[in-house]
Image (cartoon, rainbow, N blue to C red; front, side, top):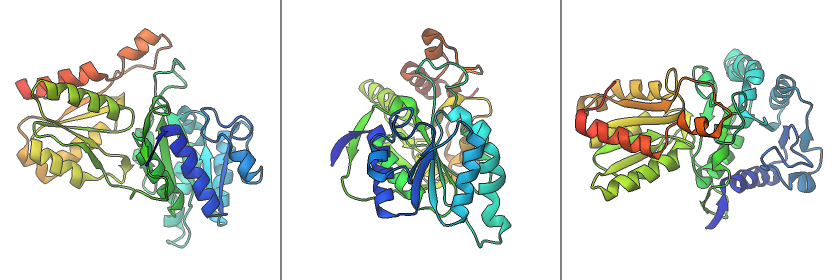
Length: 330
C-alpha cells in the first residue's frame, strides 16, 4: 500500500488502463502539455503521445459527441471536462444519446465511455465554476454515476468505470484532489453500485458521499469523544444506489441524516430518504430521516460567504445532536 493523493489515484487509474487496453484514450481541454486543469493528466502526453491524449477545442458538446461516436466504433474514451458546471453544455450527448443507445439498439450496442469532471465549491471560483450538479443526471436511465470520497475508491471505481460497457459519469470534488490515502500498488477494481461503511456506529447513520465524507468522519470522531456512536455510510455511487447497505445501517442505528454539498432542495438526498422510507428500514426509525444540504443559493465569490452555504463539521454535529435529542425532522 502506498499513500498517494486523490489526484494521483485518478492519474494512475487512467494510465494503468491505457497501458492495459489500447482502445482506451483520453480527450479534453488542456489535458496534454498543461496536464489538465487540476493536473489529473500530468505526464500522460509524454507516455502515450498525442494520438491517445487528444487536445480538444473549447466545445464541450462537440467533443462529447465525438467520444460517443468513438465508443460506438469500439474505443473506450475517457473525456475530461475542465469544470463540472460545463456538463450543462455536454448534457445532450450524455442524456439523449449515450445513455439511450443500448436500449435503442435492442441491446446490441453499448457506449463504453467515461465522462470525468471536477465538481464542488471551496476554491473561490464563484457561481459558474463551483456547483454540484449530480442530480441533473440522476433521473436519466442508462447512466451510471460515481462520486468517490477517497483516493482508494477513486482509483478502484475509475478503473471499473473504464472497463464498463456503458456510459459512466465520474465526478471528482476539487477539494479532495490533495487529500491522501492508502492505495494498493497493484491492479484492483471496486464494484460499481456498492456502498461502504467507513465508520461503524450504533446511535445514528450519516449517509453521504464525496467531499462530505471527510467532514462526516471528522464530525463522527468528535461526537465519539462526547459519548455518541455515529456510523458513516459512503454511498460512493449514486447510480446504481446501494439501498441494501443503507437500509441495514439505518435498521441498526434507527436514525439517519443524509449529508451532501449540493443544495438541499431537489438534491440527491431526497432520493436516499425515499429509498429508506420505502425499505424495511422505515419500520425501525425512531425519528424522521433528516437532510443536510447546501443553501438554496448560487455559490458566492466571497470566501467567507462561500463557506457558509455548504455543510461543515459544526453543522453535521448540530444535526446529529438534534436528531438524538428532539427526534429530528423538519
